[in-house]
Amino acid sequence: IGVKDYPWQALAGEKNEALERKGDRKRGKVLYALCRSCHLPSAGGRSDGSIPQLAGQHSSVLIKQMADIREGVRDNPTMYPFAAALADPQDLADLAIYLEGLCIPLEHGQYAAHDAVQQVTNGRDLYEKQCRACHGPSGEGSRHKLYPLIAGQHYEYLLRQMTDVRDGKRVDVPVEMFDAIKTYDNAQLVAIAAYQASLKTPQLLMCRTPTDKTKM
Image (cartoon, rainbow, N blue to C red):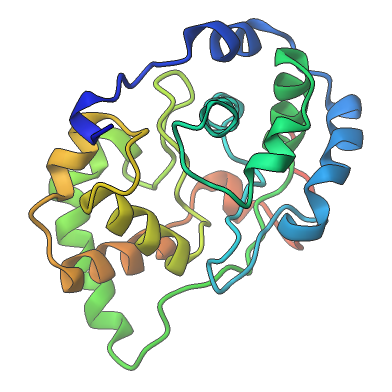
């Protein structure tokens, strides 16, 4: 299946049922035991981008991604067994609301090469042109439209996801995202990812340590 052929709001059954459920954070914390070894107790992932940052992400986005992985429309063999271990839509809702309530760690992988200042500057121009309309001025995304929060995410992870979308390896995204970056070369994607990783939302700035929690 190609990006243009994938229905953005697919998997209406399980996904929509989970979105309509009221999540239980205490139960979600118990379920997170499935995820801690990779995503870490803080849900901050790994700064090398091998494991994404999940803390503070919109619960709606988390539900969609877990549902996509469970159904195999987002190809993630490493994650699949853990997503498949969740029993039902209530599990998805509980785990997602727990993760959303965690403080976004301040320490995350950023572009750190010698030309970082220039790359961030270049990336800002590209972001404003193609990404801001959906992901917001501070990378805050949209809970209702299921656009992910990208501020506080690791540079290497952001770069890999955009590259995979551009190259047709990841299809569970709106066609608007594919169209926005399909003509960008590797250097331009590096710049955009460098800028995205530098973004900070008010929620992120409230965090003091990786274990703090914001008031949601």
